[in-house]
Structures are given as C-alpha cells and as structure tokens.
Length: 60
Image 1 (spheres, rainbow, N blue to C red):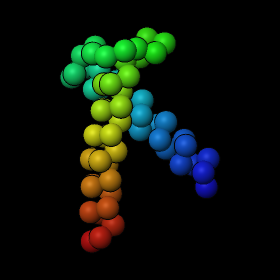
Image 2: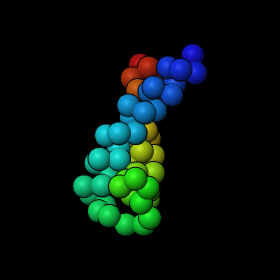
Image 3: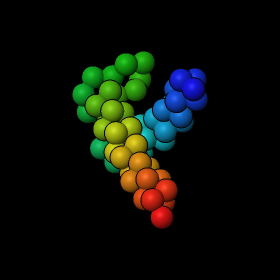
C-alpha cells in the first residue's frame, strides 16, 4: 500500500512542480535545477485541489 502512495505522490508532484514553476517563476533555492519553493507550493496546491474534487465526488 505504501508503494502506491509514493507513486501517487510522485505522479502528482511532477505536474504540480511544472505548473507552479510556470506561474510563480524561479524563486528561492534550487536543488538539481528544480526550485524548491515553487515545487512545494505547486505540489500542495495540486494535492488540495485533487483532494477536494475526489472527496466531493466520493460523497455523492
């Protein structure tokens, strides 16, 4: 079960990082060419949006 969760987080993290890098820009420190602050913000926002969408769909 933990393997599926790690895979899901990685799949969500990549587009979240890409979208936030495009919207927010290059701020903060970078690690291997990936800016950390936009990556964390994009990941968190995308997870929040997907959680709201899928939890709302499961409730109906």
